[in-house]
Image 1 (cartoon, one colour):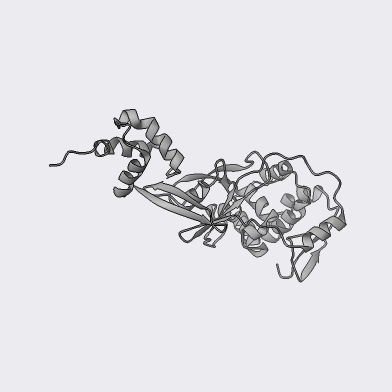
Image 2: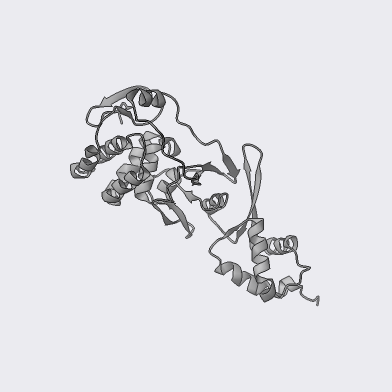
Length: 294
C-alpha cells in the first residue's frame, strides 16, 4: 500500500481550516497566505508549494477554478472552495467593494427579474464638492444626453460582473445581505438601493423596473422613510434627486405624509427622471419630466 503524501495526511485539518473561513472565493495571494498561515499546523514541509497545494485541492474536487475575462482581454483567476454564489465571485474582483443597484434590488426581493448582470461598486477616493450653483440650463443640457455607464465588465459562466466606481460615501447604507446560497455579502440596504436606482436607473433595467422596485418595497412595508431621507441628505447630490424619489414614491402608493418632507426640500428646478428620455410628459407636482404612461 503506497504511503500517503504530506498533503493527504493533512487533508482533514485543511478541510476544517477552509470551512472555518468566512470567504469561499480566493485569489492566488489569498491561497498563498492560507498555506503560509497553516503550514506548521498542517505539518507541511517547504517543498509543498502553492501549485502543488492547489493541484491537490482541485484533484479532490474541493477547490474549483473560475476564470473571469474582461472585454479588454484581462483575465482574472479565482478559486472557489466547495460552492459560492456568482455574487461572491464577482465581489472578489475588488477589495472593500459591495453589491449595488439592480443586484442589491434582486437580493432584497424588490424585482422579479433574474439578471445575469452583477453590479459591484468600489467607491472612489474622497473628492472636493463641485463649485458653482445649479442652473436650469445645466440640468437641461446634462439630461438631454445619455447617462454614462461603466464599460469595465468581466464575463464568467453565464454572468457579467460590471465594476462601478461610485462616489465616496464611506459605504453608507451598506449591510450584510443573504444570498440564495446562504452567504451574507455586503450590499446596499433597501433605502440606499432605492436612491441608487433613482440616480442610475440604467443599472436596474430602466425607469419602469425602478418603479416596480418602489412598488414592491412599499407593498412589503420595508421602507423606513426617515432612513431614506437621512441617507439622501448624507449622499449630498447636486442634482435634485428628491424630486425623482418623490415621483416614484407617489406612483408606488406611498402616503402623502411620507412625501411631504421631500417636497419641503424645495422644487426649485425642472428635473428629469432619467437621462436621454424621449416622449416626455411633465408632472407639475414634482416639476419632473418623465416618460408617458409611467
